Length: 185
Image (cartoon, rainbow, N blue to C red):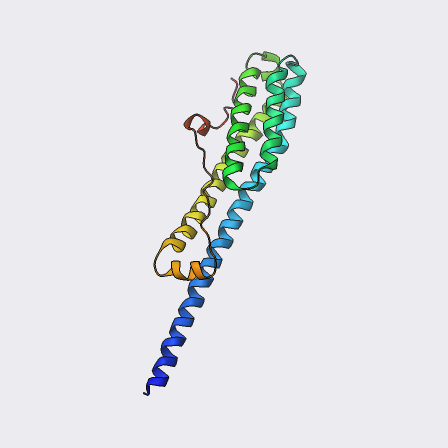
């Protein structure tokens, strides 16, 4: 074999390797995008449930305006957040506000017994579980992408083609890690 053909073979192997690594990075990036979309869908569903919860509480506890306004404001802020860090912080604040709303509801036995409110509580609990599952999936995809971007030799391909690390969707404060307790019994 001549040196020319050896060089062609080596070049072909390097190009094939670059294509394989590039396609793997694209796949991981797309999976993390899919994971973020899953979180976004669940957070949107929760945001759609918030006005119903506020209205249910308002019907029984209209003088609790501060808490009701806070929940509404936090929902609005969460809906406007775009990136995972900003969205995570806004969702933490919304979760804290929802916890305060549910604490207010405990002071109203008629509200706690209302079928509509009980249904909304169950929906909130189910949504929180789905949000946690979507968060775990997204964070797993981000972890895999970030490992590929940081690991040698795939980091060389990532750098050349502009692949950047993604941020995890996480909760900063331990107190905010608690799922809103929707059971008022």
